[in-house]
Amino acid sequence: MSEPAGRGTVLALHHPPISLALSATQPHFGLRDPEELAAAIRGSDVRAVLSGHYHLQLFGLLESVPVWVTPGVVNRIDLTAAPGTERVVRGASASLVELGGAAGPMFHTLHARDPRAHETVYELDEERVRSFVRREG
Image 1 (cartoon, rainbow, N blue to C red):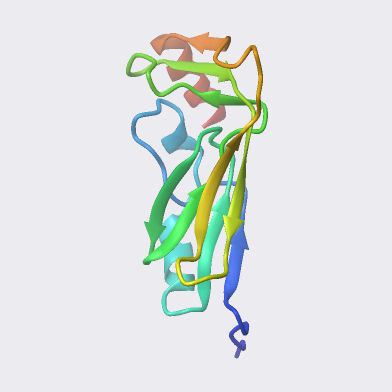
Image 2 (tube, rainbow, N blue to C red):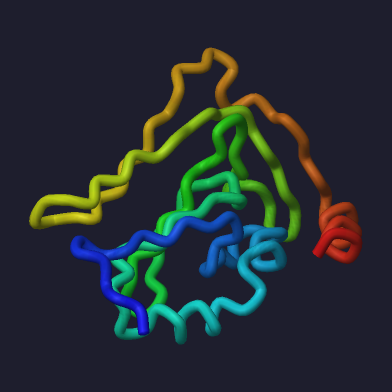
């Protein structure tokens, strides 16, 4: 039997256990069985789940545990692209997570100063997105 950590546990993983339907690709590249993780953390001392992979900031809950997806460190998904397509733009960001204090955890996004921010890195039309998801998803 495991012992709870004195100040709680933070899980860090690459593939997020939550997804955003606004993206044509993200729902295919998240954690494969998030319900298994939900069952594992149910009633545990887990205070936050931290992840990346989607290249945009995202917040949600898994079994009432905050889930934070940190934005991309070099580029990010542009959610204003037409439905079914994907556009990626320059924009370096990072996250600061404060676990202590009465309001913790708190999640902050820090954006790098980049004069080329928002420039298109690549853009995929609907057919290329479908092909990419079939091949990689």
